[in-house]
Structure formats: C-alpha cells, structure tokens
Length: 616
Image (cartoon, rainbow, N blue to C red; front, top):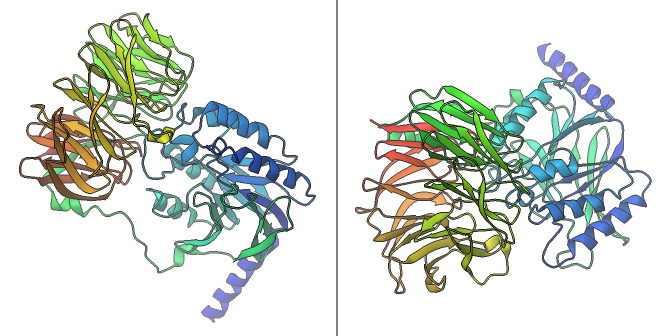
C-alpha cells in the first residue's frame, strides 16, 4: 500500500512538472571570443545574428561566456554592438576570458551589458545564470562568492518543484574549484538541466546526476562557418540541434528527458575536497578565519594589530590580528584586486572604480583619492613619501603619499597593470598585459627600457609576476613557462631557461643567492643568481599536483612559503628540500601570503577567506 501511495505521488509530481512547461525554443550560443587574433570571430557572430533574425519561432538567446578574447573595453563594446542587432531578447554571462585578463576586473562587463548574472521565468521554467572567474589572476574556474550569495537568495524565492535550467560558462565539475557549492544548492531543487560552454564542443554531460549540456563555440575553427545550438523545450524532452548559419546544416545531437528530480533522496555519494593534510600537520591551526561575502584576490596588508584587505564587492575591511573581528570598512564603487600598501598610519590601494585611495589605517577614514582614466587593478608600492602604482588607463603613476598629488605619469603602456612593481636601483620595474616588462626612472617616470619575451600573444605577458632582483640582475617569469634573467641597467636578456615549466610564481632567498620558482606540476625549483646562463640548481617534489596560480614564493627565517590553486599553504625547507607543513584553507586560489615569521602566516583565498595560520 505504501509503495502504491509513493508511486501515486511521484506520478502526480511528474504530471505537475509536465503541465508547468509549455513548449518553446531558445538558442544557446557560447564562446564567441570577439577580438580573437585571426579576426574571424566578429564575422562568425554577425552571421549567427543574421541567421537568428531570419527565424520566427525563437523565444530568446542565452550566451554562456567567453564573449570576448581578453575582456577589454573595446572588445566588450564591439560584442554588444553586434548582439544588440538581435531582434529578440538575449541573456548573457561572462566566462574566464572576459574576466581573467579583464582591464576592469570584470567591472566593464557589468556596465556594458547591465549585469553578470540573471534569472527569469519562461513557460514554466526558471532560468538562472551567473558569472564565473577566475578574475584578474590565473586560477581554476570559480563561481564568485558574491554570486553564490546571490544564488542563495534566488533559490529561496523558487518553488522546490519548479523546473530549473542553470547556466554557467564552466561545466559543473572540478574545472570549477567550488563546483560542489553550486551542485549542492541546485540539488535541493528540481534542476532539470545545466548548460555551459568553455569546451568549444557539443557534449552531453552529467553533473552528479544533474543532466548537463555543453554547447559548441560559435567560432568556425577549421570549418568555413561557425555554429550554435537550437534548444527545443517540451514537457517531456529538451532537444539540442546544431545549426550552421547560412547553410542547410541542422543536426539533432542530444536529447535530455524532462522529469521531476528528487536528488535529496539519492543514496549516491560524490567526491568532495579533502582536508586530510590538516590532520597530518596538526601543529598548524587557523587561529581565526574571516569569511567575506565576496572574492578576495589580493594579499592582506598588516598595520599594527590589523589586517587590511579589499574584496570584489569594492569593500576594504580591517580586521583584528588577534581574533579576526571586523574593526572598520570602507566602500568604493568598484571591485578591488589591489594589494594595499601601508606606511606610517596610511594605507593605499587601487579600485575598479578608477581611483587610487589613501585611508587612515587606524580608522578607515579617507585621506585622499586620485582619479585615473580607468580601473586601477595594480598594487601600490611606497618609497619614502611617494606611491608608485599602475592602472588600466595605460599609465603608471607616482603620487605624493601625504596629499595624493601627481608627481609624474608615464603614458607609454599598451595594456593594464595588475601586479606589484619592484623598486630597484632607482628604477620602478613592472609588467603589463601588453607583452612588456618596463623599467622607469623612479624620480621622473622616464622610460629606461622595456623588454618582452618575443611572443606576439598578449596572454604570455610578464604581467602577473612580481619581479625580483639582486647584483644588477632582474629575474622574471611569465606564462611562456620560462625564467629570464635581465640586465638591470639595459633590460637585455642575460639568459633564459624553460626546463622546469615555471609559470608566474617567483621568489628570492634572503641572502640573494637563489631564485625560487613554482612549476606547473608538483615541484619547486631553485636557480643560482648569476649573470651567466643557469640550469636548475635543484628541483624538489612538494606534491601539490597541477599548479598555475601566480602566488609568489616568500622566504622567511630559512623557510619558503607559498599558496596553491586548491587552497593549500605550503612551508618548505629549501636546504633539506622537504615539506615542513601544509594547511588547506578552502578549495580556491591562495594569493601571495603575508609571512609574519616562520610561525605565523596571514593568507587569503579567492573564495573570500582570510586566515591567520599559526604553528604551535
């Protein structure tokens, strides 16, 4: 009798779901990459738009990210101009190419299109789409913390039985470092489908029993024209058909059954991130952890007994170093990716709202603000009474620390600055997302030299690395996976080595004898500092797996500290080449850590965690 009753209610639920949905067709476009080097992306998208405008039976269009190649303002503007010629409504979210190299830190995507996430109902189905990173720094895909907070609010207002189609750029798998947060939420509801892009191919998928579909890129690739997907939603089936615009080609390639899902009563278990290392190295504890409601993509500064940092919501926060409790906050109007610099009682940082701010570090009260021509994602460095900082308006600035007045301005950049400069022998040395490493005279901003690694690909710029220098030699690494030694006076390459696949993480020993690098697979490497060509002096297997985030290596009291893409902070002994301890904070990128001493490390993660780690 109980089985019959349960079956009856299940049938009723299924009938209710089918009754909710009225047939309709929408179009799924992804990975348009406007601004791609070969120049075909714009033609491909225009052809697709013309093709859609000739149809009579399409309700709307959804675009699942990587709208542009590098997220520049000009690329976003061009993409919008093309898409605005659609004669039906479209919904759009960014992907990693729109945010990872963005000169605005993702701000321009939102201002250009009006949003970076959406929710709407159509014919009985609720569509939910949200942004995904990484933002500014290289890392795994990540649903931003503020988007997770937003998703919670949307789902609270959603009937548990209403059919949901979730849209994201990434598949809901471990290509997103917090995939499980999205999945665990969606499984509390009747999620009938999750759609994505990113992989540039048509692919039927399954995300822990949530049906999934990856849509192809709109780019033509090796074909004569690009393509997109027609999506027909019926009460019992969702059908995906590939269409190539301007041709007769249409092919049904997958179907998804529409049914009422009750994920909560499944007995299946799925993998989640492991924290076993925290038990193995139990001597390391987080004395406190502050959880922000937005991503933190910078290194906290320390002022006396306070830790100061910004987040993607544009808020700068000071918390107590004793207990992690909030002391003050200051709101800007743009996302903050800039690591604050402190001198005396002043703290300086840049904001996505286009300003460089100086606050009283004790109270959070604004002392001055300098307005630039675009977002300021770069990190300041302070020497004496001068602040040095780069922005996204293709300029690098020297400002007075006390009054924010312009001392000098270098306008010769071709791309944004996102990292921290190096002050060395009267030079300000930094990279930009324009292929070049620059050296300016710190007194007047005159260009002394600029260098590039020979690649025409902007993505290979030495822009995320913080250079190091000793004995008249500057060392830098870049996404070309090569370490380069440059003459500090001339900017000429003394030697280059790519044996170890060091990407964007570098450090230098306190005695200046060694340059450290974090490679893309498990190992830390050391090179002797020298003007003569060098090979790796030693390579140590630290066991961190595949790795690509630009968190620098910091030596303190004979130990080297660094973070990884999956939320782990490492302390290693470079002399004995062994791991001293590790501690996992969460499962997202760890920014360059703030080492207080060998027993205390202040760390922040992309997911908005700031933690004081102490060795007992």
